Every structure is written in structure tokens, then in C-alpha cells.
Length: 348
Image (tube, rainbow, N blue to C red):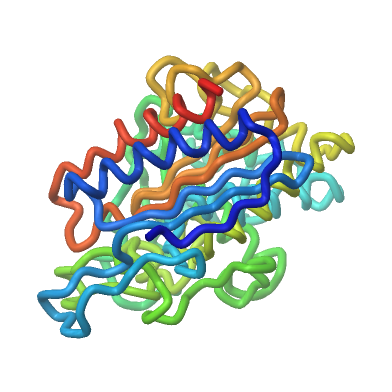
């Protein structure tokens, strides 16, 4: 029996949720993913959430038996950290006039490539980082270079990065996280992550992720992303939360849109055909499925998480799974599952 909470009166809302949840259950029944939580909320406050499957499988280093997924299960949100934690804080600083989105990141981090005054990295702006419009590579194994988190920050800032075409890059948000640290005078992990969120979680209450060969243990309640772990907190990953906290955040964004919040306007503003400030736009083949209208924005996380917000219809949905448990080296079918969930939600 699935753990569930239903507070909804709109039949279309309910039907869309039920169809989407059937896709999640099918993925679990086929052993593609251990478990997951699906949630939907709308501007009026209607909400449905349901959990199914396992938060942790028995076996390997874990001898406590299967642990069921529940509505109170915490998840490593992975790259949802970018849009739930980092993006709103950068945009709030811009709204307050503390940063200029079109100014180079060096306006806050003057030592970025300080030995190369003409280096292209020094011209990168906050807006470009938010929209992933920089030449930084998609990812770099920063954790393999050194064990000291402050030296790794120095490595990020002083490395001569190979330039390429604009791609979705964790480096953009690592830099934004360092900018937040410079402005606030404290590490990301020391900042308030917001109500219902944290930078770690009780292992017994968290969906397990992967057996990490670098750390030599199964991860539960500690960040999955190796670079974030090595940096001991970063702007690109590291946030933990429940389905309820993610839906609360999404509901706040819907309310902000209705009230004309400038930060939400920026989140919706296209910076490229596929991206806004922080978020992805709806496009052919994207994670939200083929039936999304043009107002929908969304984002996913490597561990198997995702959040999509539909401003035209005034609703949002989140799919949180532990698809990397116990290994990422397996075709979990998460790409097809996300699309199927989105199509089910939007077909009603």
C-alpha cells in the first residue's frame, strides 16, 4: 500500500496524478528503480503526494532489510539545489542591487583567474552562469585533485579552463556558490537552506543513493555528488528535502508569479531557446514530456529527482526517486519515466 496524502477536489488534477503515479509504479514493478515519491500542487492549494517502493534495498553494506519509501523520506536533491537554493539567492541579491546580473563574476570574486587578466573566464557574467551560456566544460572531476576544500576552491578559481561551446555546466553554479560565500562571509553549508531543507539528513530517513567507490560506502544522508562532497558544500548540489518541502517551494513560486515577483519573472525569462535564469524551458524532447505548454519550466537532478512548474495552468509536479541506488551504472529508464509522468499530468 502506497503512503499517500490527498487534498484535491479538481477531478482533472486527480486523474492526472493517478495516471502519472501508475507510470511510477510500473517503473518500480519492473525493477528499474527502487522507489519514489510523486507530488502535485496547484495555486489554489490542492495537493496530492504518494510514495511507493523502497528507500533502500537490503544487501551489500546494508544489513537492516528493505526500508520502505514514505512521504517523510528525505532525498538528495542533487541539481535541484541549483534552482531551489542557489538561483533564488542570486536573483534576490540582484533585486536588492547587491549584484548586477550583467556584471562579470569578478565583481564579487576579483581573484578569478587573477594571474591571467585577459583570460576569458574573467569576462563571464552572473546572467551567463545562471543560463549556462559560458564556455566552461559540463563537468570536471574536481574531487580528484586535492583533499582540502579551500584549496579546491582556489583550484576552481585559478585553473585555465578549456573553453568550448555553451553547455549545461556545474562549474557555473560552483562559481555562483563561491560568490554567495564571498557576499555572506560563510560557507554554503553554513547558510540557511530554507524551511524543510538541509545539507544533510538522517540516514535512516533518507533515500539511499549509490555505493560510492571513492568514499568506499553506501551513501544515505550525505551528498552523492563527489565535487560537492570534496568542496564540503557548493552552489551546484548538496540540498536535501522531502516531497512536501519541494512542493512548498513550487507553491511559493506559483504565488510569486501571481503577485508579480521579479525573481520569478527572471526565472521565466528566456536566455536561450532552452534555458531561463536557472531553469529549463519546455522544448521537444525535454524532461517534462511532450505535452507541456510554453509556460512550463523545470529542472532535474542526477540522483533521480525533478521539479516542473506550469504557470499557465497554475500547478507543479515533482518526481523524486533514488534511481542511482545502488549504482548509477544501470539503465534505470529515468528519462522515459520523467516524460511519461509529465505527459500523464498534462493529458488531464
